[in-house]
Amino acid sequence: MQQLKDVMSHDVKVVFPDATIKDAARQMRDGDFGLLPVGENDRMIGTISDRDIAIRAVADGRSPDTKVRDVMSEDVLWAYESDSVEKACQIMSENQIRRLPIVNADKRLVGIVALGDVAVDGAGSEPARKALSGISQPG
Figure 1 (cartoon, rainbow, N blue to C red):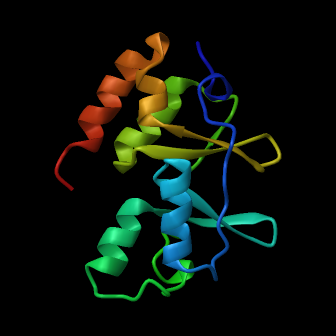
Figure 2: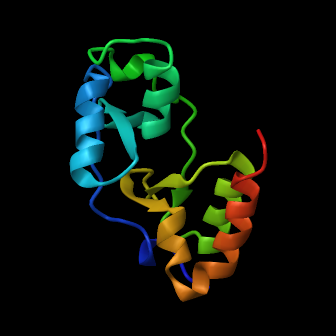
């Protein structure tokens, strides 16, 4: 059974809660990713996704200078790097998310796994298919 540490992206960027959503969006654009963990005092306190910016900020007419903390998701879902790909896919499916922060045994952020990371891996294609099916269900 393949572990998340084998398929996750290790180069994780973190944004501060007092950064602007414009700064967060630029980091996402420049890094070609759609989720940033939000960190404060060496702890992950939330996440902000491209969707959070679109739905919670742009759709409500908020300024690009809006603080990340004002639109971030505070309920952080994560998995351990030693967890199986199947477990991550189950978490993503049940919560209708496409990206999941990965932590080590000390609960320190060490990576991000995206549904695409799992789908391109041969061992993860069936769990990814099931996750995508769950994610795609109407809210």
